[in-house]
Length: 420
Length: 118
Image (cartoon, rainbow over all chains, first blue to last red; front, side):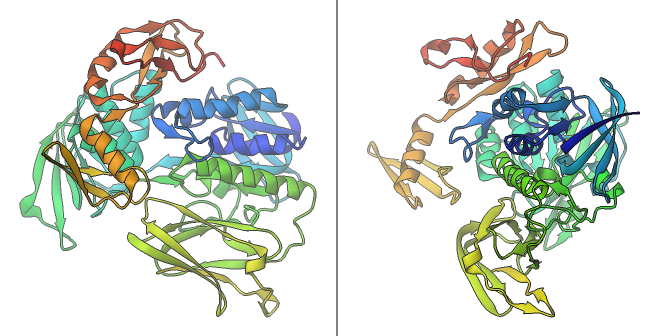
């Protein structure tokens, strides 16, 4: 089998993969990037709506335009791109990592690399994850699949549509389908509040009078060959009120019920995962439990804005470079612990001598919240937050001057985060 | 007239009630001036960026994405979409190529958002 040698292999050519590859290549390291699709950009080319790049480029771009800013840079740099190529296995617990790749263009080959960046993104949760009873007719799609059918391949997935879950992709699809002449009959959300961004609730649902049923569940799917109807039941005081079940006749059901990091490859390589995010556990360098294997973007934790994916990937690229230069090996790291009202924090470790950038999600909806950061009993920082909610990730920096070197049994005291 | 608007100027997402009394607009619930400006636009002439895909003459890339190069009045959205769906473009296309120029005298163009082939 053909073997190729690189300093760094980036797996996945979406927002995260492209930004990290660019960062690494700009310092002169030899980089390869692989992707299973025939084009660069990952999910971005099918996200034809606008609103990308507000933070990074200070303008509102569509997904394909945002991707193109990076694609044109990749083309101009000395980066080897392998498209239509899938990584099937990784051997990572050794100084030179080896990845088996299967490609319709290049055949089967191996890439040897000193460092690997995991940037495979995420996949959608689907009907199977929810366990909705009923028949198994045609016409049931995840929102992202419907988006691809419509925006890349040009197929209309259905004409009378019900959307399960108020995630952003589902909301975007509600408007997109309405604009294509389909009728969107409702969005069904199990939680008492929407999971998507407010702007999408307003511009995708309110604009077209699409009803949003909060605290409601799809309790049955009807239809033999094609979806014919769904039954919907409200949740009242924490239990289903079956007496109030109603029925909507439809031919299509879309699921927008969350995303999970795509980590089959990671897991099969023996890398430790974080049960809270579904992505790998990473230290303050975004390095996984395997030395020299890094992760960034949605494979690490699911982001709500691509701008933050690119930013995280750029930081990851810098960390990869420091690793290649042997700079960061000696730095002492302490644990990061997740306290009340927080779902998770990335990364899972902190360091004393270099700036730490944490990304996290709240478990609660609250105005004027405070993030409390403690090192043992010592208060490191109180960060006032105007508004927190689970749908919007937020970031906090902890600088070396904020921290002190206090240890117990030779280990740095954990950095504790809580929200009040 | 009374209308509720959710402001999208910042993450606060104020619910603003706009009332029109004797030709004057009154705003309730806006925490800042930006909210009032946003609510005024939403009540008088709401605008949106429209995005869609357009047919091409290529088998490899049968559809290519487009957008309006500025927000367009909501009242034009469906007639604009009809116009977009009628069109077919010839590959190659570049990001920014104009497909529809000055739609119905609004000064707004529909432009390609994906270069193909890259």
